[in-house]
Amino acid sequence: MYEFDPMECPRCHSPMNVAVLGSGNGGLAVAFDYASHGHEVSLFDFEKFPGNIRAVQVNKGIYAEGQLEGFAPVVYAGHDIKKTCKNADLVMIVGPACSTRPFAQTARRCIQDGQIIIVCPGSCCGSLEFMNGVGLTIGETEVTVAETSTLPYAVRGTGPGRIRVFLKLTAGLLLAAIPASRTGEVLERIKDVYPSFKPAKNVMQTSLQNANPVIHPSISIANAALIERTGGDFFFYHDGVTPAVGRLVKAVDEERIAIGKKLGLEVIPDPEMGLTQGYMKEATYDAGYSKAPGFEGIKAQPRLDYRYFHEDVGYGLVFLTDLARQLGVETPVMEAVIKVASILMDRDYMFEKKRTMESLGIAGKSPGELDTLLA
Image (cartoon, rainbow, N blue to C red; front, side, top):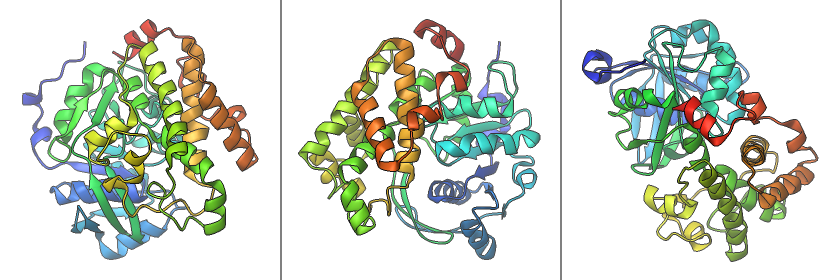
């Protein structure tokens, strides 16, 4: 039996070596925040993503404006995974769902006992995906893998190595480890930077509470012509959500909530979560988004060929519908969104099966079996 005593863990209350894998806007925000709190941060990305890495190398750190502001030093930024992860107490995996497996396979040779690894956000059981990619077995490793329900920032890039943080969330944040008995250790380790994270029952709850597959594909489909015509020169939420669009988002959300209910999990409707997190001022599916102060200034994607389809449909909605079929929950609206997105992008997201129960190693398991496995 794995037991954690925070009084026996000196690293929980002292500066850590933190490795951040992923140099996108989210990765820069995580790296900036940890460095600002006095931790030594190393930043990694693959060679095909050199822009922010090169800028952070030159500047020796990251510049931020908005709710997080100033300059934070980074001790290493580059493409050497061994140098990034060597002696790291905490490894943060920050990127889209498609990056989780490549990061796992790259980091496999340098993961060390005692490390905590957090997939942020887990998106669709990203923690299980990472464990499978590294070759870890649930409950039989001294490495602790966890995931968050969402990225704790609304953030956009303003230039190489520079970000604007519209909002750092202080509520509505969930985290779960695999197994869930280790969640307390992870929360204790990160509480100086993220004191607002709360324990989820398990990683199914963190995954289901992520609303990106609910909101991004629906709004993108409804605004497809505008995105193509303007190159995304409009505000995604403030201009892109009308009452009709809100009804589509709500229909998808209701199916997500039904999946959670079948697993015995409470999944909070997205407008209610948005109100809790500080994005919104009212918990509605139309004006809640179109008048949300937390979404102010956030432009639409520059093209349809973007993660709002490739990640949130190809991974997120495919994951959710496959889980629903395993549980006996009908999801006709989600399946329709997948079909329409596939037509728009001239590809078959359902056929591609980027993230399924089989690929995660949990196919055929009942709600009770999943609960026992992840507890």
